[in-house]
Image 1 (cartoon, rainbow, N blue to C red):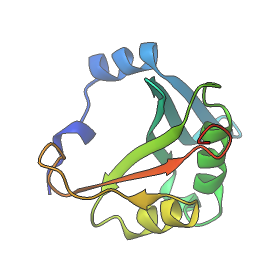
Image 2 (cartoon, rainbow, N blue to C red; image 1 turned 180 degrees about the vertical axis):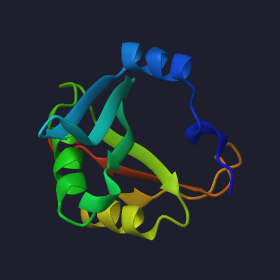
Image 3 (cartoon, one colour; image 1 turned 180 degrees about the horizontal axis):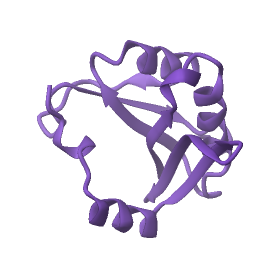
Length: 124
C-alpha cells in the first residue's frame, strides 16, 4: 500500500517542523521516538508518532501520545490523528487511549483510519 502523505522529503519535513510542535525521545543520544502536534482551529492534530522498532511494545508510544495530548494548546477541544488501516498495533494503542474511529469520508486517504477523541478538559 502506498499512502502518499506518509512519504515526505526533507523540504516537507522542514516545513512541518516550522508549523508544528515536535517532541523527541532519546536514549543515550539515540533518537528512539518522536511525535508532533499541530493546532488546527480547536483541534490538536497529532502526527508522526514513531518509536524505534526494537523498542516497540514497551510503552514509549503511549507515553509520547500522553505527552503530546498534555501539551496541547489550552483552547483544544479534540485530538485527531490517522494511521494505516492495517496498523493493528497503532489502532489498538489509540483505542486504548480513548480514541474512536471516524466514519469513512470521501476526503479521507484510502487505506487510512482517522481517529478522534474529545479533550476532557475542554469538551464541555
